[in-house]
Amino acid sequence: MNHTTTTLNRLDVIDALMAQKKLKNYLEIGVANGHIFFRVRSPFKVAVDPAFAFDTLRRIGKTILNPSNLANQYFEKTSDAFFAEDAGRVLTGKPLQLALIDGMHEYQFALRDVENTLRYLSHDGVIILHDCNPQTPGAAVPYEEWVEGQWNGDVWKTIVHLRSQRPDLNVFVLDTDQGLGIVTRRKPESPLAFTPAQIAQLTYDDFAQNRVHWLNLKSPDYFYAYFGLEKE
Ligand SMILES: C[S@@+](CC[C@H](N)C(=O)[O-])C[C@H]1O[C@@H](n2cnc3c(N)ncnc32)[C@H](O)[C@@H]1O
Image (tube, rainbow, N blue to C red; front, side, top):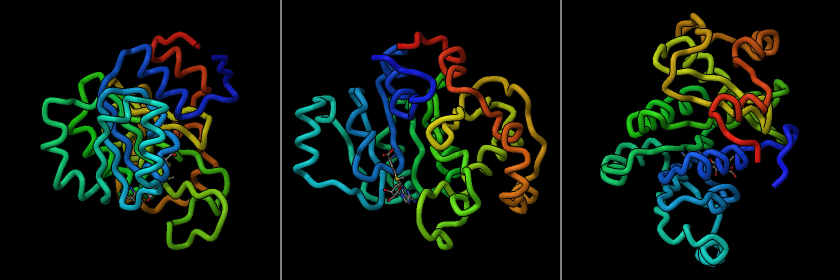
């Protein structure tokens, strides 16, 4: 495959980590029609979404294309319900190595998803957060105010929160595919110092003026360097 920086997307990131780090356990929160989920090659995959946008026929078709889908576990519920009711049982003995968080794109929802996922993440596991880098005010509004077009919500506040409040995590955002947040248990590169109350008050204009600094925004090539991966 010939990946260039301009085409790096979440599936490229997932594929490279899965294949080169030989990962086995994958969680996706917010799966929709499984456009990404069904393509991931991993022997143990967990899908969580309150409204899956696929039927049994699509599942069968995707399993023929990618036999690793045979062992998938599906939870048609919110991520909060999954973590409250199922995660302890489902993930016991199967520490997560990679998770894509792409469910409800609002600060507190995405933060809970990260914090809950961390409870089951292996020490060298990786969390990818989609939609961290909205380009317009309209893409960054709360879900109830969203009218049309791209919606990223305020997941960017989750990044600011983690960089301010979690000295045990290194967090940066790849400047590609709506902003791919990367969370690992490593020493933070350059922490921020916001309180949760301050973060709640921040506006899109504040964000737009501080985008690169607050997101710790990196070029897509940084991904390969950070994880010591070959560019395929
Ligand atoms: C942008 S789509 C996910 C796209 C998918 N990850 C991909 O890359 O193709 C967002 C999904 O999040 C789901 N969602 C909304 N609220 C959620 C919640 N509280 N917990 C889990 N998923 C949620 C929606 O039903 C929707 O299918």
